[in-house]
Length: 329
Image (cartoon, rainbow, N blue to C red; front, side, top):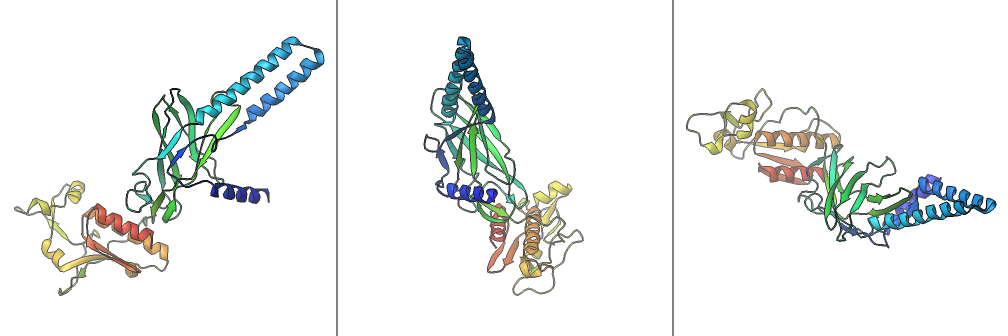
């Protein structure tokens, strides 16, 4: 019951925080509360004050008020250590537009990094600043950084992408307890960017499917025993260098060339309907594995999924387009 109320309150509270990729910390969005050590210090000060009053101890008064003054100054320093810091989601690591490098290539079930730049313009250093995911289900894993005077520092926060699709960057929290550890100053940040998570590739996917005859062609395509699409052949003296498949040559130490005649007659299509499984997610995982395998071979390949068809091509841009289509399927 208490956990449900707490979760609903947190959801309501977070909904009031604006979505932004640049978060500047001011008195309006920085919060402070005593830590356990701070509460213990408060109880100790109360006991010292009662004892000093009871026994009329002048040195007791001196000790009590000196410790209380140090705690108040520490509270001010702790709050000022986080206030004035600007947090930026580094461009190119997370992007609201799918396909523009949203935190690299992330597959479902894998761990990705969120790269954040912490900066400020004041002449004092900002030591011991921590950044972590705001996650009730797991203990936060803090990434700590020290910001030099009028400088910046970069922090990487890891998170695990559980499901494929387009997801918003997880909610982050930043905090500091410098210098005494008696107060915790923190803030909550909701980045606006989104992360595109690709389906997890099937661990032991079957060989690539056979090529389909082009329109006007005849015959059936062949598949090598290694499971590779038969669009390459052994290098022959006089073959143009542009036909050499360098990726495959680097792995096998043997030069191979594209079979232009074969590639003119057959096309490699990765078809959703051709996957020998009934589960939707299993089909997407198999197609993801095939896309990666075909890209490593340097072959031209096309993709057919429900409601969309991507024509055969090759290269990093084509691979990313296919993976994005599978992620959003």
